Image (cartoon, rainbow, N blue to C red):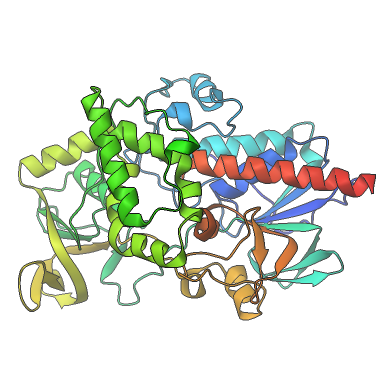
Length: 466
């Protein structure tokens, strides 16, 4: 797979007359989707620069895997970069021999990273190439300059922008300093094929790592550990129930919302469908439901309900579920409830210290390999990008009360340490999850960036008219 090459040293070309220079910090899926939606607005004449420190664009954590067995968790039919053209991704697949292009299939995540990269390449090499610059540098901070911004780069240089969009994506966990834990997004080092592997976490990252081990011919036991021991459910046929806004109990407490969701699931099953019909019907209303919850109720959701929601909402493709199910049926893969406490070197690898559900005290658990699949880190003060950490240190941004993301307004404008809007500075994608919650999947992000592109375009025209 080839990726768009972006220039690490050449500064962006001088702005076209009247063009507003927008700098997007982050070249993962959120940044790429934002870029192409801005460039598509020819009426506004945006000039866009992407800042990305890695050597790949369009991938981020989600699509940087090189394992073809790591599949998208959403069907081809719902992965277009453009909501207005739902068939765009399928057509892109169909134009490439050897790639599946059925709208209901699930393709490999590396393929989707190539798709996003290709969208950028079309702009960089096509008629509009003067409007897009991609610079391989990391943004380490920013400051106001007049009505715009100065972005500080890790090279010691700076970049001027009229507007800035933070698209820094998920906060990837730091590498384990002891070297005893393998990260969920790291290549699995050579491991005794008959040795036991402990995976901390039972979510989608665990599924990926277990599939990789099985594909490599691992014969030993694979044990997945989490507090509740819940596994992501399988995708299946779904015909969502029809729910209008009037049908949704906005403002209800979390306990009432889950009773309502269970009632919808029973209703769907009574009509010959499944619980998936209820979950998929609720999804378009999740943002309204989240914004209608008080901070106390949001905290309650995160403590008691998020794990249950996630395993039903974020499902796995049938092919992945089948391989996992067969491994469990033959006893090679098993799930345990409990907590990981620590790890130390062992004779044959690692000795993990666990606290297992229903058992008192601590348990020593030897394994040839321990893989940390506890997922993304939400505390941006510790795990956020350099620019986000710098902004919080300078009072240019703050976390939401639950510390799961930046405090942003409904229009994605970033709020500073005292809650004041910083006009012209926006945050999108996972870094804005505190305001929108469901903002990690492509269908949600493309809706967010499309709305922001429209708003920014209207702002440009208003300034020109004024």
